[in-house]
Length: 64
View 1 (cartoon, rainbow, N blue to C red):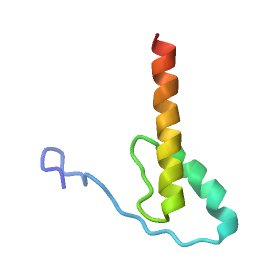
View 2: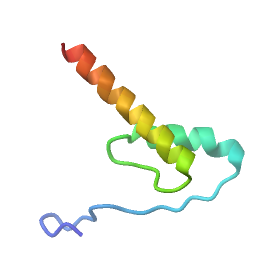
View 3: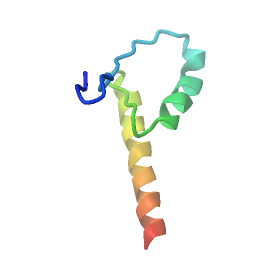
View 4: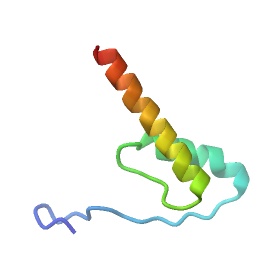
C-alpha cells in the first residue's frame, strides 16, 4: 500500500480462461503495457518483453 495516497502499489490477478481467449486477453494486457506484466507462462512473459522492447525501439526511433 502506498501510504502517500492510500492506494495499492500493485494488484496480482490470477486469470483462468479457455485457450481460445488467450489472444484477446493478451491484447488487454498490452493495452496497459506500462502497468501490467505476465509473471507466469514463460512464453507469455517473453512475448510481453519482446513487445515492450519493440515499443521502446519505436519511441526512440521517432525521437531521432
